[in-house]
Each structure stands twice: as C-alpha cells, then as structure tokens.
Image 1: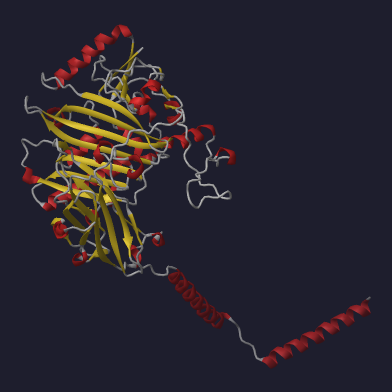
Image 2 (image 1 turned 180 degrees about the vertical axis):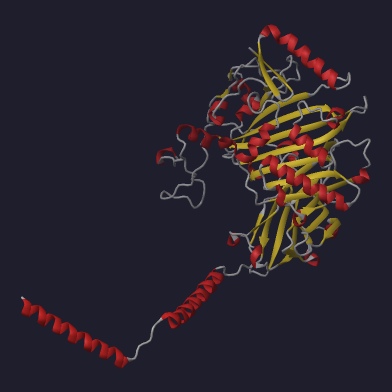
Length: 610
C-alpha cells in the first residue's frame, strides 16, 4: 500500500493505481489554476547537537513554499488553509509568532540555534506587518488578527490590547520581499504576553498546520509530555513573501520551528520510572574541589561518562517513516535527520545503529540521514568514556536583566551586556516594552562601561522613548548603543510603581505582575580581520516579576461580614417587635396560679376515682 496526499485529504490506494492517481491530481490542479502549475514544495529537517552538561539540543524545522498567486486565490495545497484565510482577512503581509518556555543558558550551552531568530521571550510573543491606510485601520486589523490566532492556537492572544502593543522603530526589519506593495502602507505592531503558560493545547494546533499532521516524518517525535518536560523549548511560526530576482516570481513561505533542550539523564530516568526519584548515595559523584566541601555534605557533579541514548529513549517513540511530501530522490542536499559531533567523536559515530540508509556526505563533524516512506527510523548513540567536550559556539553578547531597589513605591532595572570578543565592538538595539503601571524616569536612564574608557559618554547613539498613558498604552523604550570589545555595559534606570484599582488586580495579586523580556537585536555586520559577515542576531532576556502595592483583600470580606451581622441584628430585633405578643407580669403569674389549682384538683379527682 502507498500513501498519497492531495490537498487536505488522504487516500489509501493500491500500487497499480499510483501513477493514475498522481496524473489525476495534476490534471485537477491544472484545471483549477487556469493552466498554471501550482507546485508547492515542502522540507523538514531535524538537527541534533549535544550540549554541555549532558544536554541535547533538538531543532525541528518545517518549511513549505507555494506561489503567491495561488495563495491570493485561496488555492491552498501545502499551506494551511486555516492560517491563510486569517492572514488574507486581516491583510497581514508578514507574521511572526513565538511560544517559549524555560530559559536558554548561554553560559553553558553557548549561542542559540539560528542566531536566536526563532526564539521568543517567555510566554507568547508576536509581531506582524499589516497593510492599512492609517493607524486606526491598522490597529483594528491587528486586533482581528490576535483574536483569530487566539482561537486557532488555543492561546490568550486576544488579551493583547493597546496596553500590550508597541510599534518598534529600530529593532525589527521585514524579512520578506514586497516588490508590488507600497511599504508606506505597512504598519509594524508587536505584542507579548509573558504570563501566558505554554502547554499541549498550543502544540496540537501547531502540528495541525503541517502537511502530515504529525502522523509521519520527524513530527512524529513531538509529544507534549517530552516537549514540555525539556529544560528549554521554543515554538515559532514565520510567514513571509519571497521573490526571486531572476524569474520575478513570488512565493509565500511558512516556516515552523521547534527548539528543545533535553536533559538526557532525566529523560532516561523517566523511561525507567515515570515518577522522578533521587539517586542512591553510592551513585552520586561529589565535587571535592570546592573549598566548602566536606565529608558530611555532597555537592553532586555531572557524571564523567556520556550516557548512551537513542531517539526512542528520549522521545518515547521512533520516527514512523518520512513524510510523503518531503521524500524525494536522495541527493547530496537531501537531509532529514542530522547530528553534530566533534571530529574526535566520528569513530564512535560510525557505530551508530540505524534503521535507515547510509549517511549522506557532508561536513566532517556532521552526519545526515535520509528517511524512507513507511520505514521506521531510530538512531542510537553509544556510551562515551572519557567524555569529550561537545561543540559550543561563543555568543556575540551575554545579557542579563534584574530589578533593583526595595519598597512598594519605587524601584529600578539593571541590564548587563557583556561583549566577550577581545577585538571587535558590538552594536546593539535594546528594546523594552513596559506595562503602563511601571513608569520609568527617563532622566535616570544611563549607561556605564566597565572597565571605563574615555568614550563612555558616546555609548548610546540613539534613543526612542514613548511614554505610557494610564490604562491606554504601555511604555516603549528603544536605544541603539555600542558595547566595546571585552567590556561590560550596564544600563540602569529608576521607575515608579502605580496603584491599581481594586478590580484591576488578578486573583493571584500577591504573586506579582510579569514584565515582558527585553529584546536585544544585533544587526548584520562585519567581524574580524577577514571581514566575515555576521548575520542578524536576536537575544531575549528573562522576564521579570514586578511586585506592586497590594491592598489587603481580606478587608472587603471583613466589611461584608460586619455589615451582615449588623443587618441580621437589626432585622431580628424589628421582626421580634412586630410578631411577638406582650403580656404583663402579674397576668402571667395569675394565669400560672389558676393553672396550678386546676392541675391539683384534677389529680385529686383522679385519686378518688381509683
């Protein structure tokens, strides 16, 4: 039996009808498209890269192209119809959507994959170029876009209102081509929800956008239990138009990416026992090099042995064959599953147990494999002893951000940017989107360079500040600055905390309010003596948790209880006065005496009778 996909339907046909079915599908496409062949292409790739500390980076990339003419006519084939109709209705020319959870440890893992272009801040982040005639129309279409994406991805994107929307000036540039579109009618809008929890409800719609719907290809490895158990995970969706300068034709491209960092030891432990259990004492390896180490306390360190693993061990399943749309005649460029390893690890790489064809030839530290339809694929990596340091690419910049100060009225923000390059400076664009109840003082914004040098005052070259309006819009702070080589730039400013209304506090008000991650953009530049061009790089800091002046929410309940008690006492007293019958004291005594006499006479008569 052979699988054949056409549009959003799926048939099972016999091998004898395979050629006929393909010709029939091609004839239908030619008829609907007006004698124009609509040829969509689809590619998918899985990159595996070992990281320091027994971590593994798994990068899933799904990419499809299609003629933009067919897209405008709503002739969707590989492009998801649900998303395409939303983009057409809202006149969105370019869309970028991010779902992120966890923290990328650049000190341990190095630079982010894809130069950080596919990663977003904690929670949900989105930005788009919307075509409109004026600002009011652009904001209306932006709201419609968020509402539609909220229903499509089961996320709270509909909460991105004017208070959570900014318009970056220097940070973002369109990545698509717009030869026939007036760029003055394109409006860039950006919004984020740092408090949004990313879970399986967002992964399922993500997989539904793929041609194979997670039933075949590398997407079969994506399971919510494994993905959201990772130390870091990021899901991204990018839609943009691409035009060829040679043919003059334009395509619509959608690229879906998932980057996840797996803890190998924890994943293997969950395989044996779903409930995590601490290691036995004899299995711990203590770090005795620390000055505070002793025989009474053990500071565990990573095992000195690289643990053996396989795809089925880490993801709980194997790849169920290749996706029919991504399977081609194998060439040198065909790569479905690739794994990175240093040259001194290649001897071990040759002993990989594979259920697939031989690896394709590529880089000396890269092994790639081609998937086959209906043929399961698994990859196992043997044990390494002694361990070999994995590949690690030094990031262009290290960034950290935190709160300073104390109290419930004022505070401060401190951002540390460190350039590890000893020769070349780094030009960055720093962007912050702050909530309206966090009001910064612009005159306190300053940059300090360590170690200090004469040109410290020229670190910040441009500054864009858009103040907040209470309950209408947030604060936008954007600065272009230069980080000197082998130095640290510290950005600081003070802010004031606003007092919210009683109804504006969330149910977990004492937890705090999430502040979106700062976005650091490094534009393309030349580096080194050879003038090597470094592509654009994007870095997100961690989100912050802001504590605001919070009233005592028990007081309203105390007032309600006190008021209810007074009302009960007053009502009971008035009710008693209205319905109770009043009798004089002497009358009560006289009535009681007559009753006693009657009772005594009755008993006497009863005794005589007996």
